View: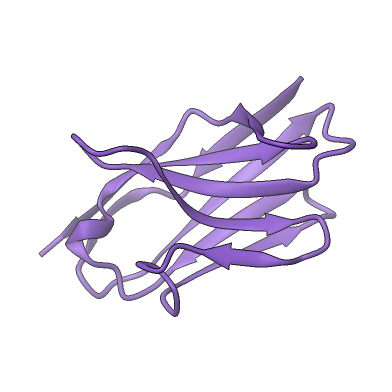
Length: 116
């Protein structure tokens, strides 16, 4: 099993920044990709950003040029640096990990609230 623990959420004003962290532990061998998803009230969960074990990244169009996903392999941690935050970024952000195809492991989520 893989355990994922997120941290770093909170309340921030529009235009501000936050950095989310996701620490992975357990049977992490073979994890080939990690990602951040978010779900706002009344909306479907959406992929925000993902990073592969090789370092390739992809982003949702809505966050490109504002958010950056990165990883520290020595710490088994993935980060999401969020800049120029907007009220529409308000959501519960969850970390996910994939071994093979599909994200099978999920964290508990952390709330991000952006006030206008």
